Length: 255
Image (tube, rainbow, N blue to C red; front, side, top):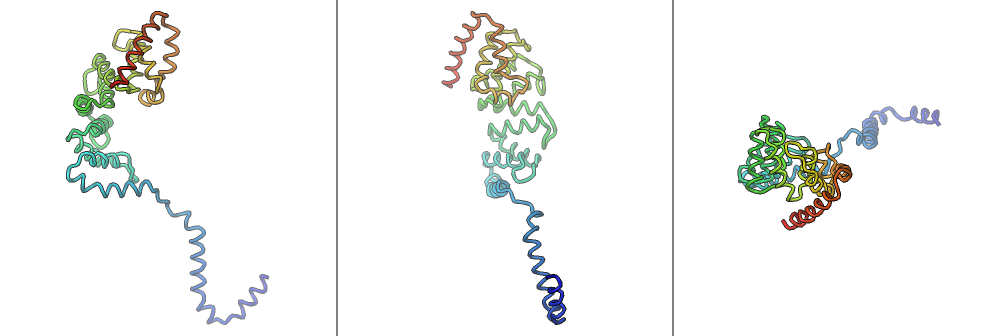
């Protein structure tokens, strides 16, 4: 077969070869691109396309001062939803929304100050933004974040009493992280008097949503802590704890 092709090629007039050569090369180039070109073309992520379109659509409204849209744009830049994170742009838009009293934006800009992302790290400013959202809006995430600053003494004086107060406010809204930390504080006596009954109550609440609780403090597993605690408390303490737990569950459900 090979020899027949060579023989046929030799009998083709030279002019035909010259005229057809560009077309043959074009065909081979097209086949090469068709077969292998896709390997080198970056695939488009539809989520990135959607976020980019959403960003372009929302920018005019955000420029006019709408806090909800400003927050949404800040999140897009913060999380890199258009392909790459832009912490500075995120801080700019989140702070604009936060200054208008938008509680999630106040929490978000506070976290950027705490992390030093897009802005200079400043725990005092983080505490200020957390406080705004915690007090004015009663935002449980901000209450937890403020409690954590008091617990660690960052941006505010180390004050376990204040930490307990803020954790309780968040915990009473069903915040799993706050419930778990309260359980640990009472069990271990972290800055407060040890109270195993209170520890039992808060760990029992947190254990119902243990995965959420451990997303805040991976070192505290409320389910395991609860099981260990049950072996250490008396029947009377367990009875008191169960009574308090029933009351507390009703109060949290009614909020």
